[in-house]
Image 1 (cartoon, rainbow, N blue to C red):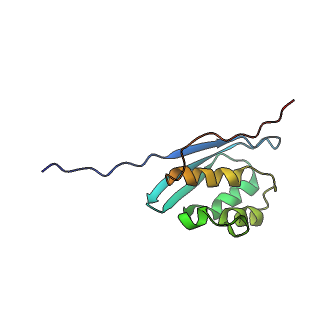
Image 2: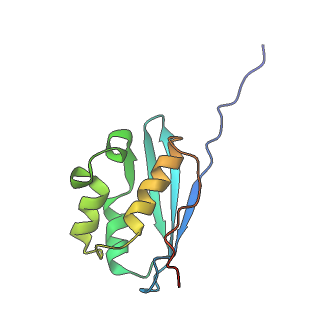
Length: 114
């Protein structure tokens, strides 16, 4: 009988260029089990985003689909002093969603037309 190896889960990595603040960062998501992911923020020089990542290191399926007012990511962003228009909280949620296999890892974009 052939022994099967558990399927290795890839790490999902997202790069965020938040715009005028000039503090880009990366987010890594790694599946812990069927309903949980570990999250790491990398490279941000923004003290607010650094505090955000100290608070959001793991996320479950319920956290991912919580209403905005109850989302642990948005609550942590507010407590961390993130600017209300900072795209990093959304990028955290998109990273978690793709890591859990709830969405395909596709780019999202906000682009100003000139």
